[in-house]
Length: 286
Image 1: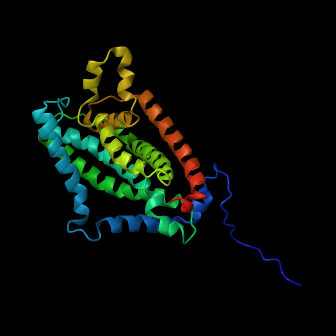
Image 2: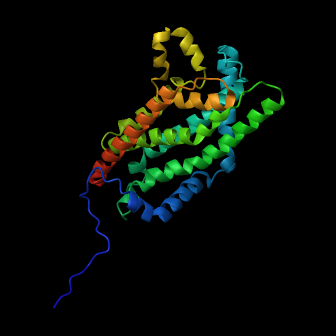
Image 3: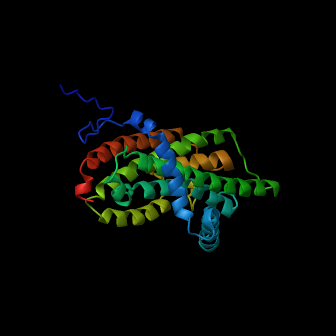
């Protein structure tokens, strides 16, 4: 008489689109840690300067902004030293950009792995978002070095209690980058043009975010009833809250942060749904 086999795992492409597989992701947490380490090592394994690029990139970009936008264009920075003003915006922006760019090519970059072995596919975009936190931490330390340097020089900077919002701001940045990135990654399995459009779109989005100019400049050009247009970009309230907490300049808009929170939530929600849908058959189209 044959014994009925009892399987400990049942892998199937048929599952609910609303199944976020949180328990399964937790069960594969060792793989998540491994992927975070792999992403970090792979990016800088054969480079001469290695992680020093984490410092070089924001410093050179901030210096360029200081010369071009602060010096040549004459854009004011609300009394904040130019390099510190630009560095404060770039610190958070770079984290968002890295999360978005990394997750937007998950299916394409990992097609060979996805076709050979099973694991929760959400591990890949999550590993990118978590791994980029290390890069953010290094650049944040760089920002703090410049911040305390200018404080010691006697520049009046009002660091306040709202610096405690930093973890929340990071979660919002990660959420928006992860959600939009998964949507784009899912769509690029059929429409490769989106990968080219993304790099162009991210560059434009940066100029629509108060990084090279203060939000007050936009307020001065808009009637008071239309000030909300300055915050229609969901990244803007997050950047402004960061500047307000660490520099004492900018606009802390609770309504704007609520808008960013809702935007992040729905981005992740729809991102996971679309990701789960494409996951079932993307090997046929990638």
